[in-house]
Length: 117
Image 1 (cartoon, one colour):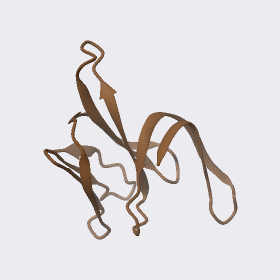
Image 2: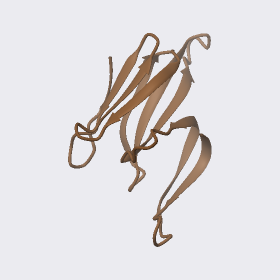
Image 3: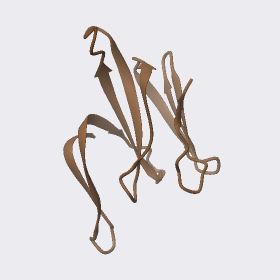
């Protein structure tokens, strides 16, 4: 799924608005059947000095608050081919052909930064 512009998040049972926020164009990764505690957004960025250079940007957004939990935007441009979520370790791994990105969510506030490897 791709998002762009204003996004509104509602509580499922009550219908109460939890948060709203405006986003640049990005793809939302869905790790079904898991219910991960954050939205994972992936987008491609262009270098401002040299528009021929591209990189991937990954952003984790807290499902309950809409706040950014982590962001990394200098990831080698690559095609993501596989994603896993380990609920026990609270780790999301995104695997590409030449890159592996780990998102560590192991904190009570889910505030651990994104880490690219």
